[in-house]
Length: 264
Image: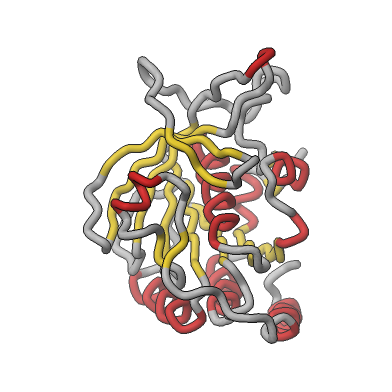
C-alpha cells in the first residue's frame, strides 16, 4: 500500500486488528551463532533499533536480505516492511519466491511503499507502536534530513514500549549518529556449492560497527541455514570478496540472496 493519509489510516486499522495477539517476548533474540550472540550479550535487543548499512551500492540486496532474515529470527508474528519508492527503483522490490526459498513466509509481511522520507517515518512509527508485530523493516535510500538523531530516538522509544524490533536498512549512505542499539555493514559473498553442485546457502560478510552492549567491532562470515532458520558461521574465503551483480545471468546468480527483484 502507498503511505498516503488514507492508506496510513488503513494501516492503523490493520495494525489495530492484530493487537489482541500476545506481545513479543521480552529480552533478546539470537542469530544462532554462539560466538556472535555471546558478544552481543545474548543476542539482539528485542524492542531496540538496529541499523544495517550496505557496504557498497551493489550490496544493497544483501543488506535487505540480511535484515529480512533478522526479522525472521525476531519472532513468528507479522512483520511490517516499509520502504521508499527509491529503494525499489535502485535495489529492487521484494520478491516473494525468493523469500519462500529461504524459508521466510511472505504472507507474514505487511508491505507499505512511501513516496518520501516523511511518509516513510510516519508509517514506521505506527508499526513501532504495535506490540503485535515481530519487527518493522524500514528501507531508506540516501541520507534524508528527516531521519536525524531525533527521529531515530522517537522510533527507539516507541519500540522500547511495544517490544517491537526495528531494522533500519540504509542503502546509498554512510553511517551517521543515531539512537541505534547496533549498527552493521553488510557485503555480499559468493555461496559455496552444496553436494551435486546444488546452489549454496545465502552468504554474507557482516561487520558489527557499533553495539551498546559493549561488543567490539568485528567482521563475521555467515550463511543462512533454511532448515534451522538460523545463521551459521563459516571460515572466510581466501582472497577478497567481490560484490555480486544483480544483473548476472540466472544460472550464475543462483546462489545469491534472492529476496529482491528489479522492476522492468
